Length: 450
Ligand code: ATP
Ligand code: MG
Image (cartoon, rainbow, N blue to C red; front, side, top):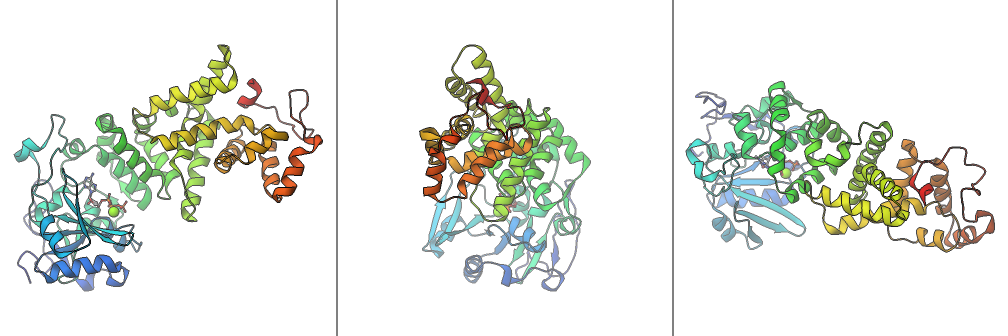
């Protein structure tokens, strides 16, 4: 066995930052990670690297999830082979990234990411940081004990060694996982400055894994949250998707609020959250996203972003209407204003903002229950998302449930019956003086402004 893998459990030489210079080795019989839970492509990559004389470990979230008895989302591999050496071993390999060069090994739709061990960056490597402490360049290769440093939390810094099926632990991650504790490696301030997105990752892992974050870590996040303002809005978009589309949106949303980070991501939405109906509506939107993810149904970022911005869009629309604009124009202007303000913080690709606008614009059109207008609503490509949105508004108490029920019932009929219902005179267009008899709640939605 290679000398850097000590076979007996030992822990000595702990540095000031809590990273031991000698790892604890958790042998095959002492942990529950089994190869049968590791995807075939990942095993292939690990074995080929190992057989070619390189060190090869499964690392990060995969080891953490396997220890927790969950199926990992993806399998990442760490090795002492350089990306070029990896690329020579695999025909299906592509090298990606400049700041951080990685090998991607393709197996159909699956990709195994192979990263070369990186050397540390700290005070000794100032040239790799900008003035706020952010890491700029990360291509200095090192050894496994160096690589630990670039990991964020102890639970994400375990290495499953294919040479002997042991787990290599430099930071106490094995114990932290057993205690469901999220602990940042090293000095918190330095590590959050290096990469402020780690604050969002802390929220994500705590919510997803039900791990606790200790008070000092919470304090650091409360103090340093504003550093998220320096992160490109496109990266924040990716991170927000991970927070909200992994089946733990509701929990993540509350944790973001608890850690006062929401205001750096959705400042306009945050200003309206004091309103109970608005916060209930957003809670329902998060919950329904979680339900869909759990049922493997498709989810679109447009829906959640539309929900988050709905209250400020409505407010601005009302102001525009009061200033004399026609409702449809007022809504479009409000949408443009809120979307351009939002994308300065968390970007939203154009294809999603288009859907958001459709969802918003359809809300008032749901009040038409007959004729050509109702027909075009029913056959609008974004009908389903807009209808789901309407139902959440109704369930939150923002608009009455009757519209929602009417469209629910309509969908239970076949297309021929639907056309009959829509063209039947008894469902003639509703006006203020022609409301259906079953409407016993006052209309409070924007449609009344038209
Ligand atoms: P998930 O289950 O969501 O994929 P993960 O832990 O695998 O969680 P990834 O974003 O896939 O997270 O990253 C893989 C590993 O890379 C992490 O476990 C961590 O060790 C390291 N890592 C990723 N992003 C960062 C970061 N911003 N700072 C430090 N380490 C990071
Ligand atoms: Mg991962």
